[in-house]
Image 1 (cartoon, helix red, strand yellow):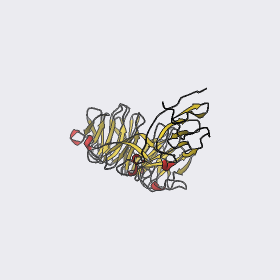
Image 2 (cartoon, rainbow, N blue to C red):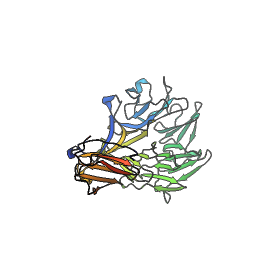
Image 3 (spheres, rainbow, N blue to C red):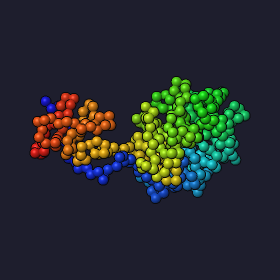
Image 4 (cartoon, rainbow, N blue to C red):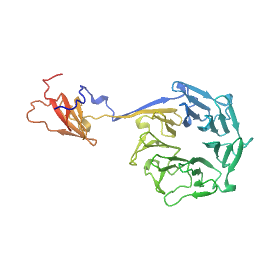
Amino acid sequence: MLKKLLFIFFCVVTLGQLKAQDYNFKHYGQKQGLANANIKCIFQDSYGFLWFATQGGGISKFDGKSFTNYDKQDGLVGNDVICITEDEHNSIWIGTVDGVSKYDRKKFTNYTIDNGLKENKVFHIFCDGSKTWISTFGGGIAILENEKFTYLNTTNGLSSDKVFSVFKDKSGKYWIGTSKGGINLYNGKSFTVIKESKNFNSASAFCFYESTDGKIWIGTPGKGVYYIENNVFRQVDIPLINTDYISKIVEDKQHNIWCATEHGLVKIYKSLSYKIFNKDNGLAGIDISSVICDYEGEIWVSCFGNGVYKLTNEALSVYTKQHGLNDNRVIAFCKNNEGFLFSTTSGLNNFKNGIIEPVSLPKELTEDIITALFLEGKHCTQELKIKDYLF
């Protein structure tokens, strides 16, 4: 008995039309309404809007159809923006080289060295309940709560006042990335410094991420990507980026890790194998400043100087005679538990574990062409056996 009809189709494929892989990148630039093509950060807020921090053009908000831009003329503290985030009251916080802006969806409130900051250049903002942690490059960390500032800096135990970011893990511990001061672990009272240890060969840490499997991922400025598992540091060995500035690490819905690097967008699989997206497969440049996975699972990436790209339906793999098919004209295919069978105008092929091999046909067949394949039990069956039997 035939248990399942999987699929029957006719197609004619010409070799000249094929690419090994095709990546679905959609580009957004200034022609589409983005304030500036130099993007430093991408953030999605609780309403689903995407926010883009630009270098020189202020910020852009994208609603899925169009952009709304804000700059100094609208009240933003400065147009050279580094980071964007959101607090528990849905206000947007913007870090710039000229200070911090809080946008309550109606107006901007600005914070600079004139009203509380120790340094205007802000690399990162972390909203933690009622507290807003502001990482400055030269003034340590300013913590704003109820419009009052407290500070973490070298005077009270921080290893460096040049701070790149603050991250809070699921256990409630704070990870502080600094320039030349290593990683500062903060429990709310004291610091533990990790710097150029046996397995962590970096004096600095730029960004952090905790994946669903409990690993802590660390992006460094010049030493590539590390992760911590069972309290042991390990470097992800990707030769092209082992000396790169890693500016952002995120996780997608399939639990793959994505990294923004100086040599392209890097996808790290759970097996720690990887794929690099660059000029060869759809991006206009290789200097990636930010990456996020949005609520729908799509990947947004900023390519510095070239705007923003959205990656959907990641790849279409194409197989032709050069990969082992008997012929490029495929008539039918059938999926089984081990892979696929392909019927071409020159015979039958088996596809398993990425390898295509020819299949010997039964002697009873007088023609090479099989026009349909069915799944019977666990195996594909040649139901219509010669080209004289047409649908």
